[in-house]
Length: 366
Image (cartoon, rainbow, N blue to C red; front, side):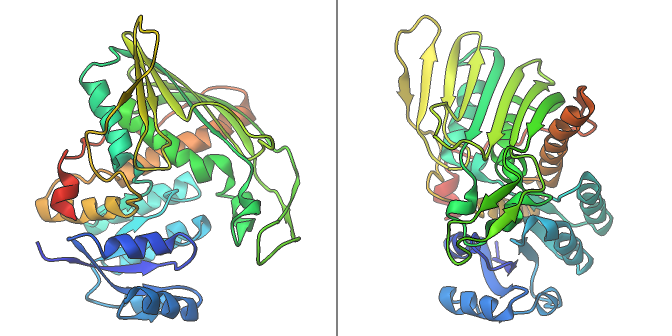
């Protein structure tokens, strides 16, 4: 297939890995990049050999661009996605799909109206680690999946991110920042969610930035920073998830474990693409390491956009889909709603578990 012409909007911290990887993939070609700060877009264009660094308006008006990769801050996700769709372009957006459920639905409805596609990060579940776990579960290694746990226990990003304020505003926080990795992996492995419950807390009303260039500035925290949730999957499996920016002394918990009638699967960090994976069969005394069955085990961010481009050409569903991202977005809001209302939140959306990746995709797509 001919390469899909890509325009990247948002040239901040996460963009470098997208520029780097898009150059490696056979199906993508970045022809322009844009940012509110045009000078920053031009600097990224020069750094990565992109023909044009420009304004957002100029990029969206470029007729050669088929696919926009939206790497703006969460508060701008819906606006930029919808502008791209109105300009007749497919869009792949960093997580979350939108800040609100209403904006998420509007983006998907607009795409359907225009006959275009929406894809959304995270695409880490397409990497060798989670894909190997999906294969093990589908092949019956753990028997019937009964339960799952997921823990993202950390201090906040004010100690390392160059501009961490947005993490503590609407659309940020540990659930909306890191929850998509964990929830997307769980849905990919166990299927859609039926209902959720939750409790939330804001432990520190202010945070002090200790990273450069804003060292010493104070952040007013507007969102919960510790969220404990329960999930009931359509399959009947029960999940437990905690996401927190309040863990000051470190934690010693697994990232994700899946518990089945015949064994337990220790799943790798869903914010990465590789391993390690461990399996413990019912009755066994020790864990056994499991080699990866799939490729894309290195940092392969943007492989979801590549899969979407290939899916358009092949007329098949893409894996990191807007429907999956919306289901995760609704669940994240559901934890907060359940906490505020003191009751379960019944999920309104459904999504199909994405098809597994081809085991030889890395050799075919790179």
